[in-house]
Structures are given as C-alpha cells and as structure tokens.
Figure 1: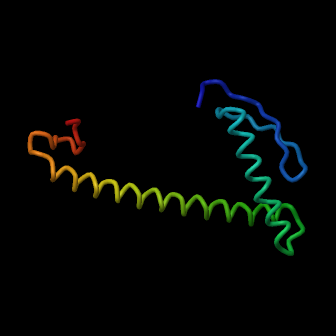
Figure 2: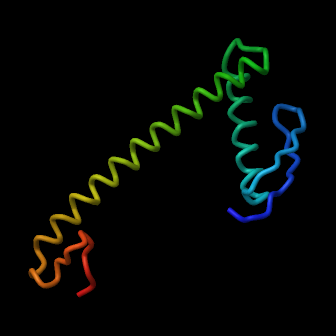
Figure 3: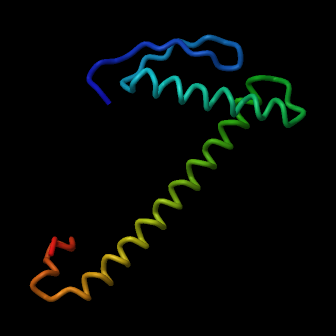
Length: 105
C-alpha cells in the first residue's frame, strides 16, 4: 500500500460506488469485481431477488472463503515449521543456528 489514497469508481450490481483506498486502483477494481460477481452468482442461483439480501449471502460466502484460506495457510505454516525442524536436525550442529532459521550452507 502506498501513502497516497486513490479514488476509484466501480460498479457493483448496477450501482456506481466511489471507493477511496490506499490500495492501488487495480486492486480496488479487482476486489469490486469479485464482490459484484459473487452477488450476481447468488442472484442467479437462488430465489433471492433483493440485492441487499444477495449481498449478505455473498458476504457470507466470501467470509467462508476467507476463513478456509486462513485455515489452509495456517496448516501450511505448521507443515513448513515441522519440515524446517526436520531439516534442521539433519544439519551439522554448527549449521543449525540458534534463531530457529536454517542458515545457508
């Protein structure tokens, strides 16, 4: 993120929004597009016809994706830590390092 705030106009379910953000305009547009597509998927796949209800259901789906991604990243971190510990044990004592990081050989 930069120190400069950007104003980006985006369309979400046919309505224009002006978003002010530290993120790049490209990032803001990508996020808005993702939200727009998520809401439209809900509208197209269910009996929901009101945009605000579709937005809530889309927010729940996006939040579920976030929680699953976080859990996956946490599992990956744990696996990497375990693998790092295994590799460290294979190294000669002088190369193991005290900081918990593997040093270059």
